[in-house]
Image 1 (cartoon, helix red, strand yellow):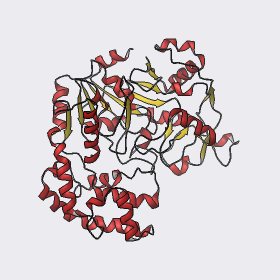
Image 2 (cartoon, one colour):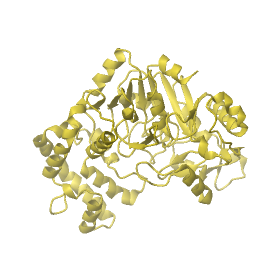
Image 3 (cartoon, helix red, strand yellow):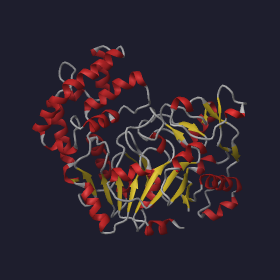
Length: 464
């Protein structure tokens, strides 16, 4: 079935990642949103820790964290809602960048929910102080602490709070006493003096929120954030109500997912997860919409991961460096080099098991594998007993400690991958037998069709 036919027949579709994110969901969302059948694109999760990089027709790149990628497409409605962790500075920077490049958004083309949890300066400090010792791979953008406050309810600052400076300051006075104690304790536990702590916070551009003692000031935070939030106010409304109205009227929507299935707070590889629901069902839940009609599940031809945690099929050394540099595998948010691993069917099948019935697979960045041999794994062996077939396993586990004991063995190899730049139709992949066999093998192994293959950075650099 052709892509545009799917978008015409299904009112709510989602774009999600089967692994650890960074698979090019932004590009896929950009491609889907370019269809005349789609009117609305919804971002209902993630935050400044999750980035999408897309390219316009002139090759200009856009890095977006909060505003949906459809912002660069004319006549689309962009909605930021659900559990998007809202950083006012990041939002204003994105709005400014889009305007400078000719994409002027107004209240008709951008809707921001009034109830979004706001990332606060002390939350960023909390994140930094904790990561120094725990090292779970957080981006130190204040995401985890913001979600903790969000669940706690009483300490959560919502976007609507920023529009009343006096009440915001009163609320912060109640919150900051305990928050400052915990931040100080974390830094002392890590061996940092108060002076060193202040230096770290200044380096992270948090100085303007501090008083002369190096502690966070409720008055300064309230004044600064209330002022910065004035740019946001024109776009703020009840986004859930807005979306449900549009849904009832029959508008077609794309839900732009963030991160990846195995980073999900419930179903991911604990503790190496994000703090929010990011599975396909999680994307639907945070959007507030009643039904998901179709899923585009995205993986990269050679997948990657940012951050810590076990990776049974990881590529190491010079081979990893070569792939990383060819594919430019560095985080859009952090710039950190991404870890490279070979396609892992055990992990993919676990993600596929909870996918909706109507779905298709998207394989991105097959073009970067030109001349390479791709190895696909469907079996693990214990690291301390590689030759004992009785200890082989073919099932995933959410226990990180257990998975860390295993490594992929006996891969199926596909190579060398041919040049696919001149191919536009999936049926023509038979002209490139190695690339074609790889695609067919993933289809058959995951029991789903491949609907699109990425062969470049732009929205229409695809084989469909």
